[in-house]
Length: 371
Image (cartoon, helix red, strand yellow):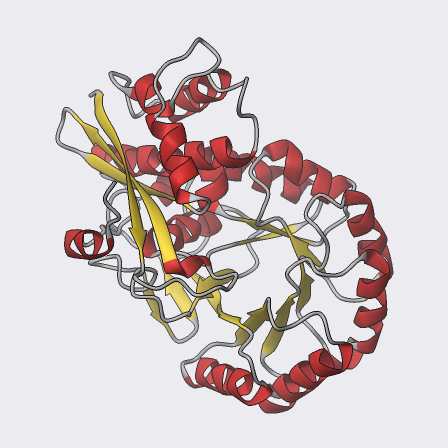
C-alpha cells in the first residue's frame, strides 16, 4: 500500500468572533492510498500556515514540504515516517507549526493503519485500559456571571460531573474573578469538579496570591496561569500552590513537555493530539507516568480530535479525565457522520477500525474555504 495524495482542507464559519475560541474553524488532513483506504487527521493551529507547510515544494534535503515526502510511502510505517518528516524540516521546524502539521498527518496515518488492519487505534497503541473516559464540560467564560452560571447548570443537567471555564473576560479584575468563581461553586455544589483555565494572563506571584484566595473553592485544577515558556515560573507556582497545576496544550514536542514536567513541576499534563500526534503523545504520556504525573487531553476543536483523544486516553495507564468542548460550533460539533458517543458524563470508545469516526463530506463542502 502506498500514499498517493495528502490534502489539507480549511473549514471556517462565516463569522469569526474576536475570542480565544478555536472551535470556529478547522484544518483537516486527508491522506489517500492506492488501496482505496483514506485516513483523516486534524491540526489545531494556524490553518493557512499548516496548509503551506504541507504543500510547500522541495527546497533541499532539510527544507521540504510534508506532502512531497509522503507520496509513494507505506502509510503503515508511522514511526519511520515521523522521523523522515522531522529530519526533512530541521532548518525550519523542530517545534511549533511544523510539528503541528506533522501531528495532523500522523493522526491520519494511524487512522489508515487501523482501517487496513481492521482494528481501532487503541488496540494498535497497546490495547484498551478502559472502554470509556469521564468527560468534563469545557466552556468559555461568558460576559456575565449569570450567563456563566447558566452554562454550568446546563453541564450538570446533561450529566457532567466536571465543568471548566476559561479565558476572557476572566483574569484581569481580581474582584470580578472571585465573583465568577464564588457564584459557580455555589451553583454547582461540592460534588461537581470545577476546573479553572486562566489563559496565561498572570505572573507567578499573582498566581500564588490568587490560589490562596481560591482555596475555599476546592478547584480541581488551575490551568495555564503563566506564559507557556515560563518554566521557572511554573516551578515556583507548582511548589507554592495547594491546587494542582495543569498545562501543556501549547506544547508540541517531547522535550517541551519534559521541561514542563521537570522544570515546571506541573501536576497534570495536557496533551493535544492535533499538535503532537499519536506517535509523540504516547512517548509524552510514558514520560509523565515515570514522573508520577496524570495526563488529560486538550480539545477545543472537532470530532476528529475527540476520537483521537479518546483512543489515546483509553490506551494509557495515567489518564485522568477527558476534555470535551461544548461550544455550539457548527463545525466542531457537527463534523462527523458518526461522532463519539457522549452520554451520562462519559465518552465511549468506538469499536470500528481506525479512529472510528468519519467526516461528513457535506459539512466539509459547506464550510470549505477555497483558495
